[in-house]
Image (tube, rainbow, N blue to C red; front, side, top):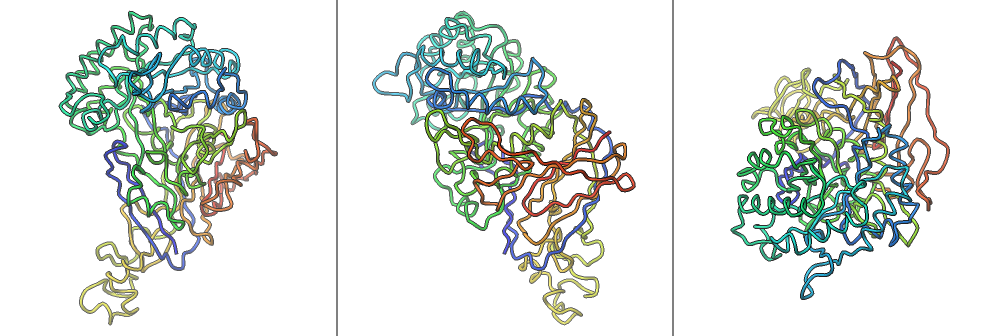
Length: 576
């Protein structure tokens, strides 16, 4: 039995438009060859920045990572691993965002009447400074500081003293941006939180935002330091009603623009997630084509030169789905998600901050801290690190073609609705299909659709998908520094007996290529993940263990063949 859940990317973490397409009972599948032809670079798409991945942490949890004094070396090593693989330049810092819902519940000097969630003090800012300037000095860390906008429209209450403390401690050289509030577009939807009322308009927000910018600038915030928006729902009329004017009006203060996105939500243990968390469910898979509708309205953001971040995201909002977000499924998802996300929009986004905290549990956090001073690497982290290696040295995205050996569009069969009948049937569906050569199981479209045998893995009779059901997801980059092409192959089908072969042609000098694999004992594994033969299992200092394993792949007529087992990742590096 096989269950595939394919997630078509919805816009906004709290307004789910997720489509769960379930395919089951695949039947007798067979191994296929995917002929991949690499062609030209994708035009007008920015190379992948060296600091594309970063972290997002709730304000009260930050010191749980870096320590009360900012001296935890294992967390610095967790970040250093990315720098070691990325080839990032000096002006591409590792971006750590301290924010989230808690930012609008964190009060400098204490919240009144027992309100709020966390008291910010000089201790926090001093720890940030020590961590960035000493503990992780070689990593080139910079922070996104999220100030409290939600509890009051008066910036002098909490935001101004927060920013003044940043200056007082000499933290500004280590600040990437300042966010003003978190997911402000949700304020009118949740008046019970007290962050404004249900009638709060974008125009009112824009006025208050301007007042905050002016006050924070007066308090010492450097020019062009604001990460704008931090909205959650890109298609919300509340956002779209004033977005164009907002971007133009405050362009001179924006360091970047942020939008938060999770493919699905697990808030309130939503019913759909019972399916997702089932032990038989496949990985979280997304199509992110709709992702930047938000930022490509008339390409305004890009025309204004405002960099775009997914400033907070992960597999599922509200902590992730137990049994999925904390398993090897999430590793596979991260690799595919980031590869799609980096290619969206007119010129492409500049990065994503993966949300998570140090607390242990079955959530989506990339890194947890089981006890003070220790570190535990989770599956999401493997995906983030592998993406960084795959796109190292500002790699350029390449166009390619994929032609599977199976007949995914039923060109050699007979089509009826989504069913593909063998040509020998003579008909597909209709009142007499059960008497056609091959019988009802082969020639009646209703029974074929019920059987749910995907054409991506089966000869007719089978079911076609508008997503073509490619078993292997493919992404290709060119690294002009290392002088190589890299091909990412993700076998996303949970069919253990069915490996798939990629036959890759079109580029390279004809020399031997090198291959690394990322595997796990099962899709549900939380440990035992192998990253090119190495693992973070048992690490206490954040350093990967074991000897790196790369496999040479010889060229045959200028082409390369790579077998990709089910539920695994392969990265092939082909010399230019």
